[in-house]
Image (cartoon, rainbow, N blue to C red; front, side, top):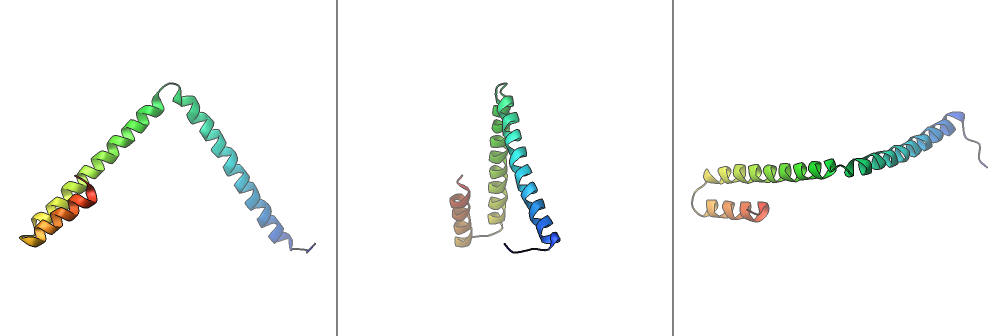
Length: 89
């Protein structure tokens, strides 16, 4: 067995403790969220996140389309087609 300086052993021990505590707190957080799931608040949060994502997509689409309005002719048509293809409106 190789002998390491005390500082290296201490660093390895601290890293191991940090990893173990991360797993422990993660398991505790999952248990807490499972408890909240019974009252329906998790479903409300998921619905709010979905609506926020849709609102963000709509805003991005509108902004991209406004940038296309500054163009004209074939470049405007290409820009609008790209926006529709990328943002799916």
